Image 1 (tube, one colour):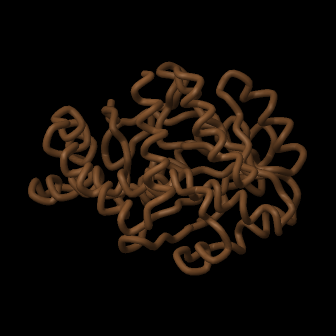
Image 2 (tube, one colour):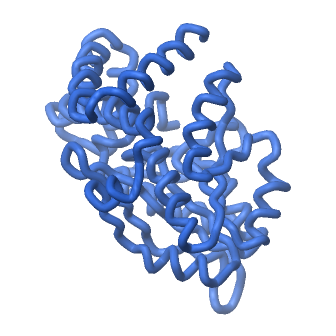
Length: 287
């Protein structure tokens, strides 16, 4: 664990001080080594892709792409302090900003739903960055690392853009308070980390367990769920895609938690299927 912390420190130094193109080149070389020698990672990624990609040859290509794209994700996360207005204008396109504006101006809070897709950390930082102009705060629910130094390392990066972190131990009370104050809470909604409290749904024809948190807080507070995905387009460019909000009620009744979960499981399926080469799921996913 100590070695991992120092590895992060060295990686951050290199990514922050080298040109982005050179940092990407180094990351690409390291990802090739990981692909060659990390047999377990290859097998797990391949297993997770099986319901999505039917062509065996394509699965091999996508497996390698996932490992490479993840290395690029880390470079940009380590360079988070360099994200400024110039970077946003040059490298990022935003789609669906009206949905975000609509919920911000309603001042009823919102739950941002994303996945281990693209560059979710950078996406959270970008939405928090936009918050300075739109007048809201964004909080991210994060599973703490076992090594407190690693936890602090990641949280320092997140705090650069006023992205506040809620540790999983105090989620319920804190999230309800934040949403009722009209702010936003972000969840990684494609994987349940509790191992016992998730909801089993069908995605890509297979069973998977999703967290109930987004649906619980939506039905509890009336806050809509706003799907948002920050995906890579070409090598150096990104697109922030903000999709239609999911509301916890119908004209004649309130939706159940299960209905809300099924609704956002379809959104997750859509984007995982669209961008399988950017889905960083390095643990067996299907039940």
